[in-house]
Image (tube, rainbow, N blue to C red):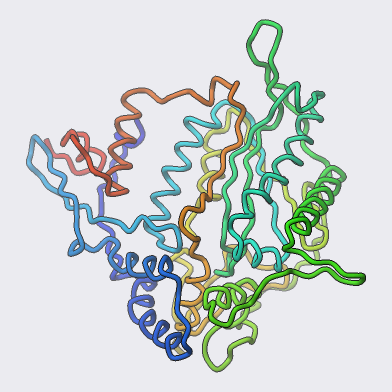
Amino acid sequence: MLALQQTAQYKRHRPENTLLYQLVERYYPQFTTTLAEQNRYLPNYVEREFDDFLRCGRLEHGFLRVACGHCKHEKLVAFSCKRRGFCPSCGAIRMAISAALLVDDVLKGYPIRQWVLSLPIPLRLLLARYPSELGKVLGIIHRAISTHIVNRAGFSNKQAKTGAVTLIQRFGSALNLNIHFHMLFLEGAISENAWGGTTFTRIKAPSYDDMVELVHIISHRIAKYLEKVGIVQRDMENSYLNLPIDDEDSLLQLQGASVSYRIAMGPQRGQKVFTLQTLPASTEGEYGQLANTSGFSLHAGVFANADEPEKLERLCRYISRPAISEQRLSMTQHGKVRYELKTPYRDGTTHVFFDPVDFIGKLAALIPPPRLNLTRFGLPASSAYLRQTATCEHKLLRHNVERIALNLPIKKITSQLSLTMLGECHG
């Protein structure tokens, strides 16, 4: 196994030495005090996210002792917060586990295409306000794309099925609230054959015309559904969101500022976030597997063949990555938080700048509410490969790694195996 063969030694994460931890530790109390002075308060789950983040990786808040049965060498593994908002350490653990699961047990052996749907800015705020509607909206998107794939394979929805795994991302590269969908669809359809088994029929890559047609269908159906449930109101001339803005809802105000790239706290409240443009603006228009309409953007240009597990794993790690990268976070000489974009915007923007207190507000806006599943599986039950399990050795290794990483109770851990995973066994 790769994890057993690697020679890199385990090195304990020290969050107190990172800039992100220092910013939260110093400015989060000031942020909550400022809100309290305005008679505004954060939801309990947001407060717990910050409190648990400040305890994450600190030995004084609990740890697991792992010992080698041969040489008696010991390592202390600090408990983690296991939160989903902005903790880079826990996000990286979740990314690695999710990617391994998808590549080894779920999507193995089939060509996969990534479909990415971005929403208009008002709908991003709406889905942040009404997270229960995420599943309904995703169902509309999934049915449109899966029907297109099945039909391209020469079947109807009753004759064949395709499958997808969707990861819902709540963040953009500028730490803005940007709810969008990364969907890994099978590049074809699965149908039953005359011998009682299944047959996979592969399709060609979608054309630009296909993308334009799909994005129009998806945008129309989403708008129709939101109007039906009363979230979108129409009159003779305009359509608008029926989104109640309550002055006491502090999180909604923070989300509204985040989704529109505006400052939420301080004397410059309501103004645009300061950006740095160091590259010339791009003049690229619509092309290939990319289509836009009315703020909806659908992209399907990333593909991994069945014999490219490394490419598929890179893709899975990308779509399940943490919200914030500590490597791109820094401070200016004037005390501003500087965050480098992963990919420059079309207007040449490469960096965004925040006041430290406003930066805490941007983190708060990214925290998902509890019991909101951000990974959705829509896979055909008739596919035997979906129920395929790993070998006992692989399952044991992953089981122990996950339980160490996620602080779950461990009834019995083989000491030698545990220390081997940490790269520290001297026996």
